[in-house]
Length: 398
Image 1 (cartoon, rainbow, N blue to C red):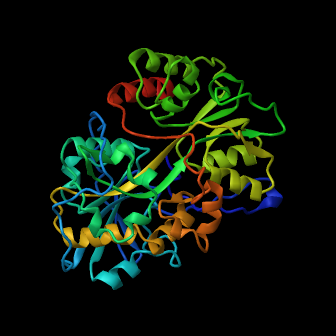
Image 2: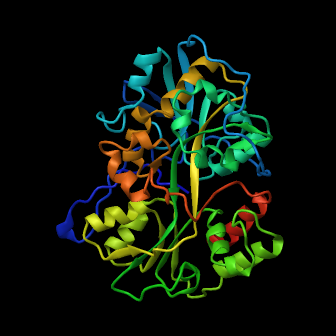
């Protein structure tokens, strides 16, 4: 559910398409990097987790935690979503690790994973790390298994600058305790080619004639469920068995077979740029890039929408807890979130980051505006996620 490894730019317009320059790591394997050297070595893939229930919290966004920050231990092991932490190895000019190391004295060791593939962090693999950037699906498992620690958010300097709507998302809380510091967020929009028939509503993604591009992720079921909202769906991430059946039926109702399931955001850009896509599940930044390339693409200006927020979490047995809290403070700051937003095309959780290259992304997502979160259902791991994953596998890969 995210723009992994992307920094999208317009190029080669004379050839009739958009070229996409990738930032971040595109491997389906976990990789380890030594900041400052640019060296990246492949490691064993991170083990895929089993499914589990997601938390349903009612908690405060400012709990009293037991952890405390002290002098840094001089080292930090970071497990990050590909593209979420840049150290200068992908592009020498893109580095928000070196300033952290210089400021704190905590030397960072990086490993990456791609949440859209099978290699995802579980409790066993997390044991060697201090902090992890987690999607809502992965966070639900780590919290339920006690593999991440509740946070003392008072130790995170810029935490209060993050909107309460993001701080209080149930994906990262349980039993009145908070487990994640919001980092980047996004929303799913219905994009369409204006030279073709305009879709009536979001349900067109699943019923209209294609070519259609859908995100290859079990959470796409929630987007289908949202199109069934008039049938009693109150929360697209909390479906009854019959509502799940109805959403799957909608996803499988189009028998034309003229649809593609994408994992790489490049596919969406290239689909519209080449004229081979009519409809797609995409993001505001996809739309911005296509408009910059003078492509006839718009988004349905209607809500509700599905969305997500990814956060930083601290391992329950973090070997370097003080450096871990200094990392939370750094990644909540505008100095880190600004470059991350500009690099990934996702919105920063901290509105103060909306300067420089990140300003364009913030405009795309209306960051800091009262309506930014209006009508957006942010993802939380469903209680029956195993069912979602199984049903999605049948839809997209069966």
